[in-house]
Amino acid sequence: MTGLPAPEQVAAGRRRHVAAALTATEVLDSVEVASFLDAALAAGAGHVVGLTGPPGVGKSTLANALVGAWRSAGDRVGVIAVDPSSRATGGALLGDRTRIRKDPEDEGVFVRSMAARDRLGGLSEHTLAAMVVMRLAFGRVLIESVGIGQSEADIAFAAETVVLCIQPGSGDSLQFMKAGIMELPHILAITKADTGPAARRAVADVEGALGLSGPRPDGWRPIVLAVSAQTGDGLAALSAAIDTHRRWLAEGSRAGWLRAAQARAWVEDAVRGRFGTAGLQAVAADLAGLDPTRPFSGRRALLERLSARLGIGPAGRGDPRAPIA
Ligand SMILES: Nc1nc2c(ncn2[C@@H]2O[C@H](COP(=O)(O)OP(=O)(O)O)[C@@H](O)[C@H]2O)c(=O)[nH]1
Ligand SMILES: [Mg+2]
Image (cartoon, rainbow, N blue to C red; front, top):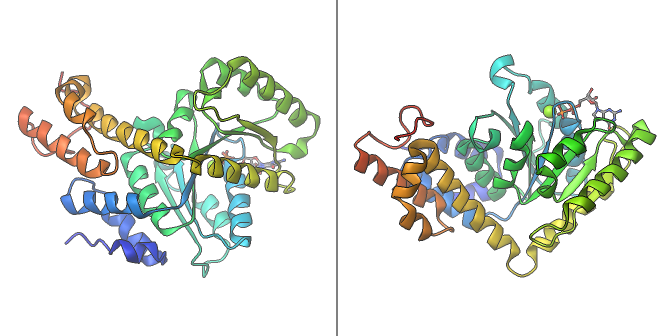
């Protein structure tokens, strides 16, 4: 018994079915769970927005404001809050949760917080599974994840639209540019716009930094804006920018390409995480032939094959980061 609801039940979006699916997919290694997630990935149509940036920049407050705006527009929203500190503080996100879920009777908002991992830049495979479940159930999915150094990049593993939050006067844009992070976000949101001139300067700084880093390989022109979650100024513009990027992705086969690239990255990351680069080399041919529409089944099969070949027990046991070579 896996306790898995039917994908159609999850798609109907009732909270108890979503919760059951999230619990049942915490362990990815069964055939049933892998097929469920592949089916969910194919059927889900929710748009996944990643909200990232340093601690204190205003992500949670902005997430709350976005959820409010989307709910007012009648959209149903799933929120995944990835918190690197939640293990240490045991419930740092409780405040966020109560702030976001204003109405406990509202079936249209679902918030799940989870601890960060070291891999996938703080996003665990569990986060990916949760994202896949959420985008089956909700038209909009928001992932809040703290970026620490290079890990701002890794929200791009999961989200379709990446919003990087930058604090006015922090000098962070310079750091991001140096670290090559400026090329990743589709939208750069200068937070706390109510703080005045510093926010306006930050917009100019970020636009300058983007000009220096040249065009993105995918041709998207990043949108820079200032937003205050406190006053609501710029919130409509942020929401519109997210939808502009969503429409851009929907043109041609951009969204499909993106999902396929992400799916490959998930499987590669899982293999690398358990079996190191030697594992990746051992299954290079299988990886090349991977069906990106069924990454969870592909991942499972590859891990099982490697475990059998190397005689080290079922996939997913032991220290997932221990390399074999
Ligand atoms: N002035 C101002 N302060 C804000 C705004 N948004 C968030 N803050 C404050 O910034 C701090 C960090 O906010 P939080 O949303 O928890 O940041 P996170 O760590 O990125 O999730 C809190 O004290 C917020 O009240 C804003 O739009 N204007
Ligand atoms: Mg937060």
